[in-house]
Image (cartoon, rainbow, N blue to C red; front, side, top):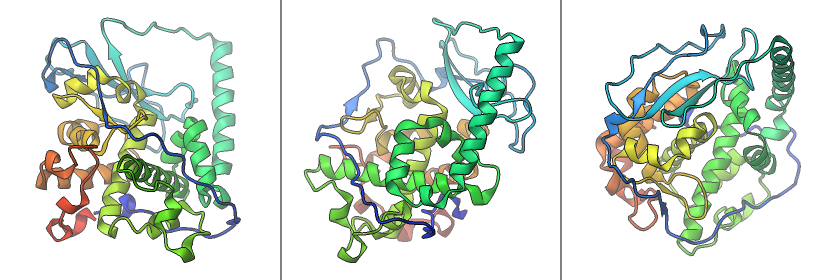
Length: 336
């Protein structure tokens, strides 16, 4: 397996001594999506990839092939298109959108002046994002990473689609932070301490780099941490680049053939739901323009779903991955 999906090694340059606890939510079972009044087959979710609003913009990222819609009568369509808020001229950041034919999005026509303003705004945001992406103090602070995850989805998008491999370190820190947060939600749901500092060795209490904190967590063995890291990678990608699908319970029900579940008191999909998405949708998802770490994570999770039944992988109570059910010796070397 490519190293892209492994938790990143920390960069200690510029770390300060600040400490911050991960905020967690209340102890409740997973919330099922609302029942679907008209059950549908997973193939009823139509898929179209490619930039539909004009020719694919020129960029170092490979463009997605365009597929014919699946022959169904379902009203949902999944497309990849240019994110107009983040793209300009020959620079494009893709996003995945879910369209409902019963409530189509209005077509927007942009005048030349408005288009120029959008281009200038996107270019200015990109320049700022590049500075933050290369700031080792930012990627080395769990507090800063939490703030970005909470308040700056555009920066998250630029971080995951960074063109230079060395610039992906911020995205790796964001995923490490996401992994820690998801793990603490599970511990809280189990009635256990949900401050990450309760689960690191005493000598590591002062660490603030997300990768270091994840490495020091005593709750899981390294192989399981890598799987949790891959789940968090896919979760962050879908919630940021495919929010229409991620938040649409009915569309997810169609895709999974059963109701999706979410982490207690959050909008985040459970481990079970993410495994189910990979099992049912990964072949189609891989046709989109994916960042290398996301593609690597999907490949790892596909191998796991090929070897294990997802209902056995995850606990029935909270739909989190049950590490006791996975034998690292059963996993191929290239998976981890």
